[in-house]
Amino acid sequence: MIRRMEPVDVPAVVAVHLQSFPGFFLSFLGARFLSLYYSGICTASEGIALVYLNGKGAPAGFVAGTANPRGFYGRLLKRDGIKFALASLGALFRRPTVLFRLLRALTHPSGNPVGDEVAGLYSIGVLPELQGSGAGKKLVQAFLEQAAARGCRRVFLTTDRDNNEPVNGFYHSLGFSIEQQYVTPEGRRMNQYWISLADRKQP
Image (cartoon, rainbow, N blue to C red; front, top):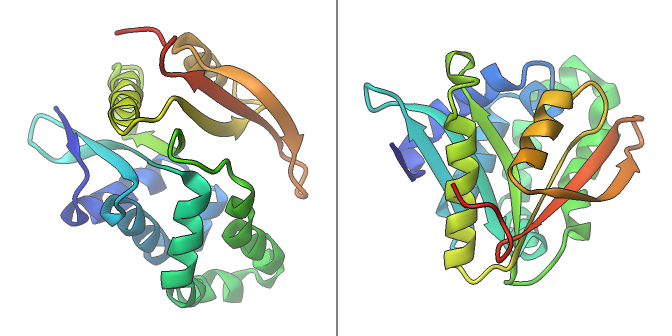
């Protein structure tokens, strides 16, 4: 079952994120930072956030993003920027060299596409035991349906280009196409995918 993400789901979503993305930057920033992030998405008027429930009715997967991506991040940082900074202190104490990367993470979304007809899919994860079960595909399809219902015409996402063949193949299989490739200051080569909601593959 897939339903809308609610604030009560955020701790479980954070737990799924940490298991899905060990070693990634957002995971390094910690559970408090992630809680603010996902709470901000699921309570925003432009938020598109869903959870996949297991047989016991507990969140075992999620997908999160928003319409008008640039507008969302600007408002989120204006409202909760200090909270995000405070939530990052533990990570900065553990590794002070991440400061500049953190500043970029908090300001980079200002370059995201803008407009109510565009949606950004920021994050998707499922528990390890659900990988390969089709849960991820169902979550993406549900996200696209919600984006279309909001009046969005296109959806974008980014993911790593290198050593990430299963994920890149997954998005290709769903009808996403690479429209941009770039390299982060840390040297990560990234793919930016887009899909037209009018042309997307149906389940």
